[in-house]
Length: 271
Image (tube, rainbow, N blue to C red):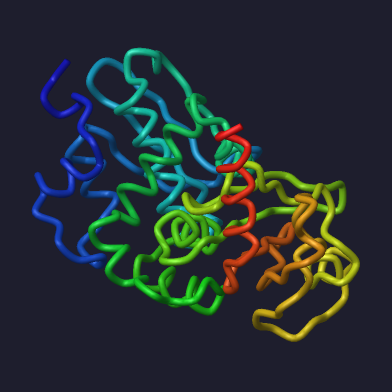
């Protein structure tokens, strides 16, 4: 294996290239540094493709996607190249929905590539200082996405993971919940409902209604299955994607529900 294609963490790679600001993260140059060339072309049925042969790779990215999605697709395939190079003998083809649906599958190759792409394009050492004490809303997400030149979905996931407050992001289609990511401060006993409650903004968006933008405070049982939810409230901010799916950011601005759940879990552990 050449030095160009050896595995390096995203942080190591960014340090190796002297990248210290979001605008310095040029995915084409980073990929070339790893012996992978990015090209943009029409693609049917997938968002990106990786063809590897020996120590060289070609990453094809859908030229019709927006810039944020193109960059994430390219970084995702670069993650495959560095993580799974010995298994990339000819072709890896990734559909866009796979990028997101695999977030909950911790050991899957797609999740490894997703995580690498996030670490590369939205690195913790640049992202965390910029989100400290910011609200978990799509207005904040859009500002960050513009700064880091990343997609709304990837940026929202990163905000949930690295933001200052307990939060969750959930994606629904009309058929039900597609995937979700909980932040590190959200107990694992908390799960979003398969379908959002009738008083949620997401419910109205999935139905095709036009709703005012911005976050709202609603009863937590419109979103969370835990039996304490009917006694608590949660902040919801929802956003309709081009394909009709709805992304929802959920933020426990009032953390009393989480405190109750943690106390219940502590009591159960002590029995």
